[in-house]
Length: 98
Image (cartoon, rainbow, N blue to C red; front, side, top):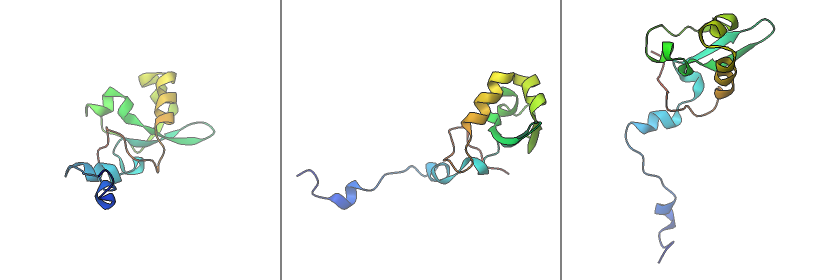
C-alpha cells in the first residue's frame, strides 16, 4: 500500500516557528555585514564572533577587514566570508533585522 497517497507524501510537516527561518535568506539576517577590504568588499556572517553573537557589541552594517582581523584573526575572516551567500537559506544563527 506504500505510495497509495502520493499527494500526502509530497508535503512536509513544519513547526509554526520554523516557517520564517526556512524562508529567510542570509541577506535578511542581523549578523550579515559587509567587510570592506583594500581592493574589494565581501559579505560576511558576524555570528562566527562571540562578541556579536552574545550581544556585547552592536552588529555594524559595514566593518573594515583590518578590524575583523584584529578581533578574530585571518582564519576567522576567511571562514566568515565563506559561510555567507546572500541568497542562500539562512543558518541556525538567523535573527531578523530589527
